[in-house]
Image (tube, rainbow, N blue to C red):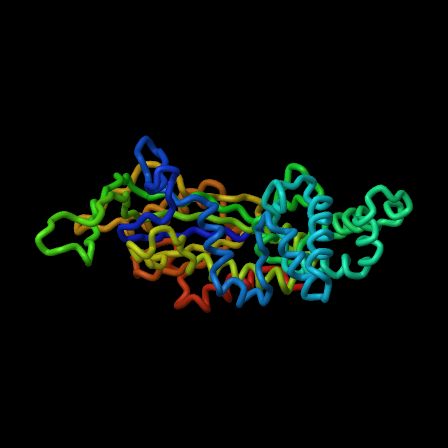
Length: 376
């Protein structure tokens, strides 16, 4: 079973996701330039959205190179000396990640809080033997009795293909140097693209020096920043079976994860330049589809020919209408008996084939999707 999510969201002038030049990200699609928000920015906004953790009732995972530092904190909290805690934490981090760059792992590691706690508990339960071995690296007996290599190996084996963190289960993790830690993502998240042609604009700004004498002229500083305004199409898909497998068969947590993902997807907005633009604009339209036919449809090709604004202006209404028309064509051609749509039509755009699927509010929309999932 798959759960698909299609969102139309209009943002006021903003720079939510910057490229290496500091300008809004963009892409060419359908022969014209489009505004773009990367999938990475969207996923981070979703997993960082407070309602995700509130709904799943599980603290989200952490992505870090500072594994040794975090373990040191936990070991010291367990009563170990700072010197010993640092030595043991560094040794475990090196064995766990494969390579170290000083006190940092060579790559970002994505771990759940529970996994971090289990690491600390394993180390404290074999503390004396590990400390002795690290203090006497040339002592063959101490090295033979050192449980650390086996602890690392057993931990990797025990956590293979599973996690306790809903966000890791959704978005997966990949470490080239430690394939044992790899976890196939249960979700796919597309880069958001504007449904229409977008040209970047430039804002020239100045700042006043408050202490500058009145007789002096000129700004304290000047600069420019790029921005745009666009109506975006966003797409994501969840593989229900993969999600359950990633969460070690915990279907109750998997259902809360789907709910948390849907709620967070409606609320999550990337944070780029928000203090300057405050583009806190919720979606105008959301279509969720539960399906058991094995197919998966991104509806982005509804906008391969860029949308033109309505006669009175605006891209939201024609974007929703083009999305619905494209959905109808796909259903007519491929069939849709095993695909159940549920619609949030916030702006009240007049619908045709999807009119019957409209839900009155977010709570009803979420409930209709969860009711379609298999029961434990």
